[in-house]
Amino acid sequence: MWQVKSQTTMTLNFQDGTEKNSSLNAVSKITFSESNLFMAYVNGSNDSFMLNSIRKITFGTLSATTNILADEQKMSIYPNPASDFIALKNVPEGALNAVVYRMDGAQIINVQLSFSSDKIDVSGLSQGLYIIKVNNKALKFTKL
Image (cartoon, rainbow, N blue to C red; front, side, top):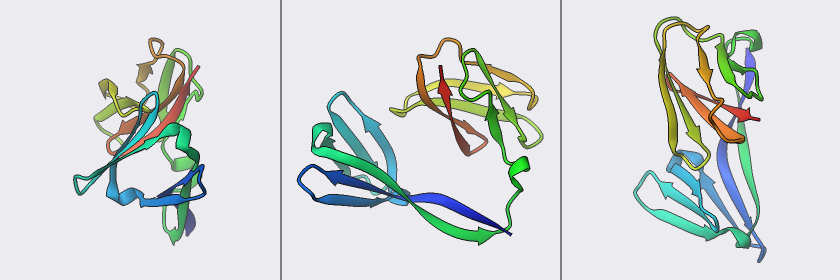
């Protein structure tokens, strides 16, 4: 048995002291522009918030106990942070589809990996935080 923590809520704390709580299960996409935070919901509705009105964004976690893989068996990315390439550790056997997204939700790399030892070239990416989705599992990495 292991304790699992997953992000389940997002809270926006505003400069005027109010806050907005959102269940991440109800949110389909979160994007940032130069001056706004946009939230698209699963039900088709949308919200937009001026970034200068937001004081803090926090993510809440839910703890649960379940049987999961030990830490040494969890899929991970290395090196992280990366400058030229990333590789995956402890991935399931078989063909892997890896998709890299920018933080604004834009898909920028989509590759099929034959082996878990295959490397993904990230040398052309700008510095920043990225999300990689591998066979419906999401991980984050930093590009230096």
